[in-house]
Length: 243
Image (tube, rainbow, N blue to C red):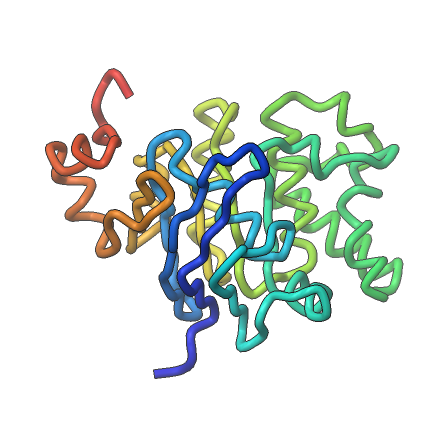
């Protein structure tokens, strides 16, 4: 078996106010895996994702991406490999136009302007945002901004695509389009979500965090079909009408 694309080794992180967010999280992802990161609110999912490209650093433990340990010296290489889409799209959209937002990353990595624009227009069309490249991001709807934030990451063609609540604020049509588009892509995928139906459509494996620790790790379909186990883990079945 090839070396893992991602290794998370007993990562511990406590916020300055004393809140323990991660209490020794460990798992591996192989290239090509599609993994849902699940857990109730406050379980540590977003905190963990911020460790994967070095926005946060473990107080103990290690994160290794494609054989490279995340450190101050390796951030550039790690961030070329890990594309992180934040839960709040406005954290990634800050330039005068959507096209400038989407091309910002590859231009700063040395990609030519023509190729960057070509990639950007293709990604925007794939996400249903064609014709909107000249608009400021704040003129887009909430769902469109979420898709735009995803475009800023996809354009750089990361090895590992990390998504924090990607279907939040999307209407039914946009949600379906996003799920179908992600399902057709080839990147290794780690998606933190409360949308268990989307997780089931995208992912084969599920990792459940509870109180900053891995409470379950295995095939996703059997977990989604076990409402009592989901409830014990602080989750609801994906087709529960109250979900």
